Amino acid sequence: MKKIIFAVSILITGTITAQVLPPINCEDALSICDSIINQDTIKVMVDHGPDEISSNSCLSYGEICGTWYKFGVNSIGNLRFTITPLDTLTDFDWALYRVDWGNCSDIYSVPAYEVSCNESGISGGHYTTGASGLVQQGHNPAINITTPALFYLYVTTSLSDTDAVLGYTIDFTASDFNLVGCGEIGIEENNEIKHSIYPNPASTTFQVQANHFIPVSYTITTITGQIVSESFISPLHDAIPVSNLNPGLYYYRVADASGRIISGKISVE
Image 1: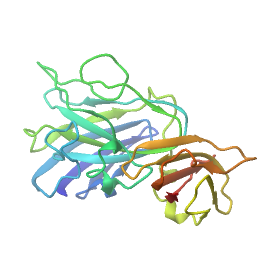
Image 2: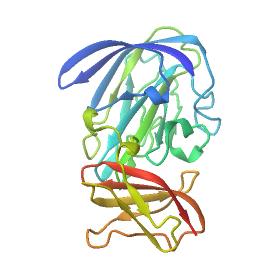
Image 3: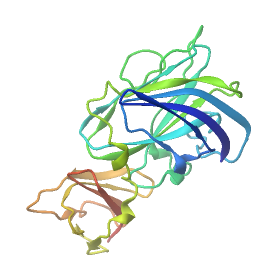
């Protein structure tokens, strides 16, 4: 992983808190839990290890000169964000990954986790970018959310930006919902909720059981991250259907009304 040092100011409820961050990778991603985050300055060290981003990404040069963030979404609607450079001479690119059915360490090997990406530069200056839904260069469509989700956002400079540079502002206020609070982020930490599934292997349906956990929605994906089934769960019929799936191994992800997630593997026969 790259060795990166950041000096960060995060805007939370009107108060700017400065902190010095150690080198990080996706597993140490900074939690975003407010609609606006200010990354005031970035200092990039040129020595770094293997990329966590594969050549399948739109980031043609992989992972370099950037940092990872993570945030959760528990609501239905459109996710929108913009990244605005504090210095128009600095270019910032980004890639967004949805990994609530796996781990961020799988990003390199599972291209399907990348749901949006942009490394567009604008001649004569560098302006806003993001998944904003705006029809202009550097902007991608908004991300439609139908079930609770955990995202990792990687923001990077161009290869020429190898020393201290001014940072950027990430703004989520145009989204249809608020991000999950920092105290609630942990969608990927499903192993803390002890649960059982039965039957496994399954041929028609299976059920998930855990104390004080009432499932309201589910997602089933292949081992490569492709969603093959997702829907809401009725309190009167909590069995999850799999009869339409080909035999094989799948990931399941089940959410309750508070946004807690249980996930694991199910074998379909």
